[in-house]
Image (tube, rainbow, N blue to C red; front, top):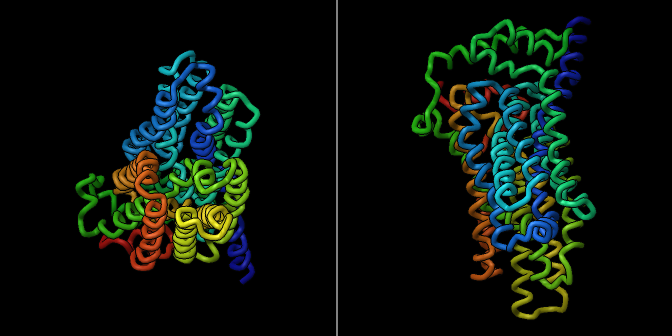
Length: 455
């Protein structure tokens, strides 16, 4: 009886290898955050030093998304062909070359090439990091560890915004190189994904990697057999193409993965993040800086809370609360513009705008920011992970670009209507999650994937 209790106790601890491997992987998420947060504080310095027009700087800002879409298209294929660790190292090389091109740029051409290369790198990171983390962590910790991906994105963006207030744009670009170098060195120390090794039939390496990740004194026999049995079943099937994703056995997983990404982006997150300062000013604030600082203060703690609750409350409850909160936040911002248009009580529009954006930011950070990526990494069997993962990541970045590009035009059409539209999409997200999204807490990847297909 005692050995059994001891084994159970050991299995509930978190091996240092899992913590170290996750820390190395989310260095890529940190680069992601810095890249997204870089363009706002760097704008004035770059335009003055290189003599860029507003149109030229707008191209510099938006070309990151174009590169990310290209990185997303090939992310699944690269990750499945060379493995999770090598995919991260390829993303690091793209980002390092891109950031250095920005640091030493003398004209807008070098600047845009650098930004595009960084985009390619983070497009690859956005897929491979959550997939790697979900494949190495025990089922009872997988959600919390995978959500650290979103936490580090928030931290990276917040750090870029804060340091950008006193660092030059070239010095801030050097900051983007540091986590890439850290990850490149760390990749030599962490194991490859056991599930990817099992898929290739490298069973000896698979068992060594799994044993390292679970701890030397933990019995991995049952977990190893389940992974091998499931991957052997899939080995006899060809890699799923984009057309194959619409077969009956895959349609539920694809609907959930793509649907969550579409709703995440079209719920207005990038509109609020990229243009929060402008929204505050439009709503009546004298400056957007105070509101932006309030957003940063709310964002990181709420993302941390999501990490802590992920494997306790579950994915679905957090998603439902998060989507409902973003719906309320957009509705309040819409009311603020309505208040301004009809000249209701004095300063009511300012209070509603601040409350709405903070409610939206906090709610999004709690669940809708990170959980779609967690679920994406959990629901796709390994034979369709490449094509499905590429599709889902591409949809996310394409949605990001569409919302970012059209937002100013939507505001010209109707500020009130724009945010009520976002609120409606967030409200539909609640129904989508309640009807279609499975609870994946406490289940192995093999259990989740088998339940969503007819394999």
